Image 1: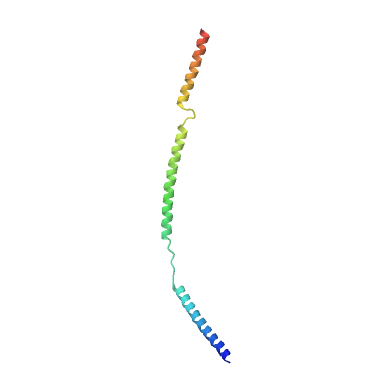
Image 2 (image 1 turned 135 degrees about the vertical axis):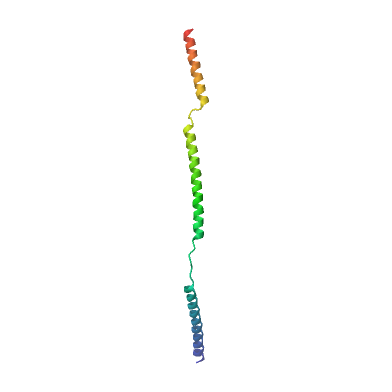
Amino acid sequence: MTKLELISELLVEELHSFKEEVNRLEQIEKNLKSTSIKADSTQIEKLIEEHLKKLHIDLTTQQKYRKEILKRIKHSRTIPNWLLVLALFLFLSQAFSIVYLLLR
């Protein structure tokens, strides 16, 4: 009978501790229900706004550089001036040589 009493005593202790834990969890649940959490997105909005401003500045800078590059490409020549002068000089010297040889 002593073993049965010991087992029943242990069961009573376990039930008592279980009841205390359930009461503690109920108290935590009440506290959680009464606690209100407000979502504050002002920091996120501020970061997004700063990022958008930076993107706008970068975009305008890129557009300015793009316009400058397109302007330089439009006004550039594929044949440099010195090469045109050299070709003209060679052409004229060849023409004078042929005329000189034909007239002589």
